[in-house]
Length: 102
Image 1: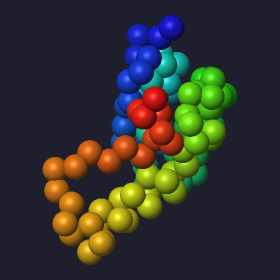
Image 2: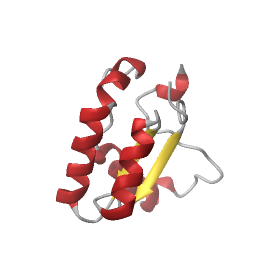
Image 3: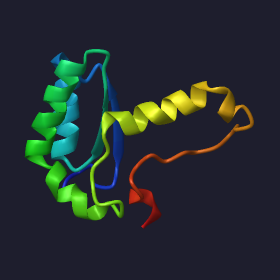
Image 4: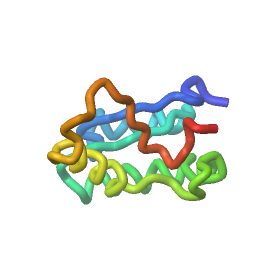
C-alpha cells in the first residue's frame, strides 16, 4: 500500500526532467497519474515507464476494463472548448473509466 493510494495526480510537463520523475514517483506510491505534455514522444515514454511499474495492477479497478489513453482526456478538453459545453458551469467531470463510481 502506497502513501498516495486512491489519489489522483495531474503532472504537467511530464515528459521528462523533474516532472517526469515526479509522475513516476507518484505512480509508484499508488496515485493514478495523468501525464500532460506537449511532446508526445517524451510523455509516452513516461507513461510506458509508469505502466511497467504499477499501471497493470490498476486495470481491474476500472469498471470499463482498461486504463485511460491521452485521447480520452483530450476529447474531454475539446468538448469543454466547444460550443457544445456552453451551458456547463460548476461541474465536476471525471474521465476515469468509472474508477470514482465504485
